[in-house]
Length: 269
Image (cartoon, rainbow, N blue to C red; front, top):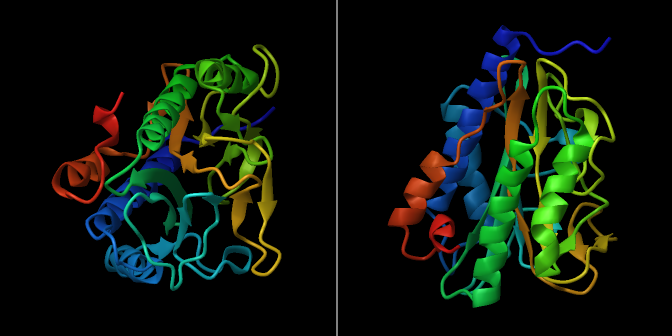
């Protein structure tokens, strides 16, 4: 029988996940045209260390950054460096932390003004699809129910749902079972048991669902057709008495309201 996380473990995972949200918010304060991705990465690393935590991504399987910063056609795993953020960019920030040996993991995508209408809609709908998936993440349901809900919500928009990348369980390891696809059939896949902690993370494109890995750095994953991609991620805990979201977008959305260079995702339905 699979063992769910104890309440104590879930509290540690929540503490780490909340710091991820605060870190992304700190980074979001500095998103504007002209800033480089390595500058944002240094801000995140300093903030995490100042909060007595460790960057969860840095050094993981050799990844060199504290953040994955993925711009436009980069779906995930963008390496911070000399890339300069420009007007009209779609910037996805994925961050991980470790507190007391437990991982936090969350992601948020930003539009840098002025942003095209199709990108605004992509951001809003990808954001919405995350919460549609979370609605199906109930005790006794199955992983396929989550993917089915996300896929069904997005289907009318003809977006690409990336199939080669999925959500995952999380705990003392950043990636644990089960895998959590953003597509699927109802009533199939692993059962959602009491104490299961998973990350749900729709990765959605304006075009194809097919992706490729940069042959030079071995990390950067792009859409095959160059279409823009958005990515939102929450860590959640499934309990018999109800599902709770461990990570928190609130501090990020507070910054969205203050930073004139980025759009307010929640206001663009």
